[in-house]
Length: 405
Picture 1 (tube, rainbow, N blue to C red):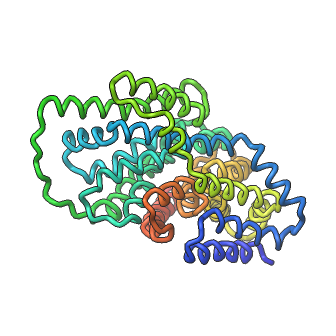
Picture 2 (picture 1 turned 180 degrees about the horizontal axis):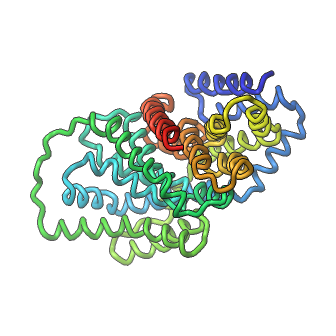
Picture 3 (picture 1 turned 180 degrees about the vertical axis):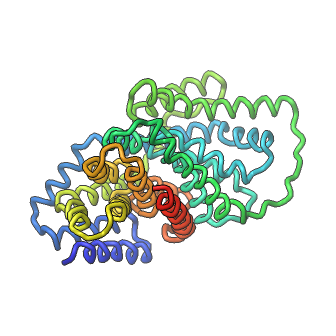
């Protein structure tokens, strides 16, 4: 079967199964087995993919990062810090629309798969008095969390892209940072501007209540900042850094009279369905590797008569959809960019922009999975506004790049 027909059929399987309300992990596993059956059908390939999935450190970093972020969310929610933070922010900024966009964006500075799970309850708290569908809230949380993919030097995909393509961080970020501004504008117009906010009722608060809320604000933001500092300056991975902060916060909350039971934190955060979904998605990605589907996609485009930028754009978009991770499309496409012209900012920019678009439009993206799971939102319904936003982003980017090449 032609490789692109195979991918179309695999994607159709995912969409149909999602429509029948199957868990995303089951959908991805079925799609992966379909690809395996047509490209390999060797039991050795299945075992090899399983072995690689569960021996890669990435697997455990993702699982434990998500687990510890959920632990942190329980700590802050049960201690009242999360509610106090929202109250303090609403009093400081007044405009709930601004906060709906700003809080996921702020937490998006932390490059952790579980970050979307931490910002989700904040979006839920902020939108408590708004008539928003679960899909609308999920889309807001998902979109604004990823605005800094083009402008943060600590995003893993950005680090890999600069290293492989042979460009400096400052140069590459300067070349692409306008896409972050565009993402803010597009996200605001599509997701935030249509929201109808009822007239706010002024609630009189005592000085003691205000001080209590400010303490909650500090207790909620400080662990996020701590994880950021440990990851950036301590060199630890996201799971280790988050685990250390969660453990420390057990004692911090107890010391300020907001203690939460250890069992509630560490047992309550365990979600076997989410863990199983993540394992199935990672197994799907390894099946694509062992069956050499990813390499065949690249080879098919390289053999085509299309212009080089179009080839890079198409490959990046498809690999982004298949892997759902910035490291995925960067690791596969950026070496091609480097081979075609090391230091070519325009070509590297095309690879990054279309790769990020691909990872924003796929059920293999873990942030999307944890977001829709939290809000109990329909995945396809959540992706609809994201799709329109990405069409606008890519159209503007393509036109600008064509005119300035």
